[in-house]
Amino acid sequence: MKLDILAIGAHPDDVELSCSGTIAKEVARGKKVGVLDLTRGELGTRGSAEIRDKEAADAAKILGLSIRENLAFKDGFFQNDEKHQMEIIKILRKYKPEIVFCNAIDDRHIDHGKGSKLVSDACFLSGLIRIETEYDGEAQEAWRPKHVYHYIQWKNLQPDIVVDISGYIDVKMNAVKAYRTQFYDESSKEPVTPISSNNFLDSINYRARDLGRLIGKDHAEGFNVERYAAVDSIFDLI
Image (cartoon, rainbow, N blue to C red; front, side, top):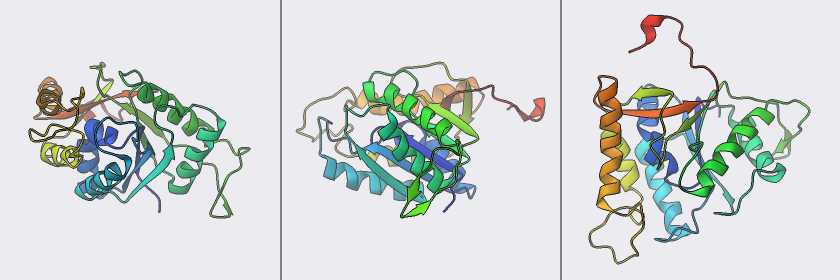
């Protein structure tokens, strides 16, 4: 299956928190979108890897994803090295996405910035024909996505581009809330974490509202780019 967009996150829920409104909008437009999780989030304070697997599958259904895979890299300890790059290259060549979304360039969690660079490097290397890979016993062709966009996470980084997600904030919030062990639950007896507060859950919505306000829309999501963002006509800007 060829994908239009492959969204990659260091942990299950990274994608939902950061760019699931954009994903929901493109799925509604008929685009094929998939998610690749690099780890199972096994170092997370709340829940477990097995629970996160189920939560990720629930979120995938809410978003209407075409595929969701997990590379089961070691949470907290994966590296930007040949071993890890090659595994991502195999996935890129398998699904041939036109666009890749990946972690924030700089963020609070060490896996986010590390994952950002790992995926960016793998996207470049995937286009080199002298790097040979196989998947299910068959040789793969080189493939390089046309665009790599870094979504914004914990830190309020200044976005380079902003996507109008008006009408899709409810889908986004439902996808986030699929991770029931991770986010605010008044009845939970699990330890408190920086992302388990009601304020953090509210912040997902009010960040989207604030970005929307800045472009004259209801809700929006921001991204950082790796090269100049270009339009065919100045009238393409909203």
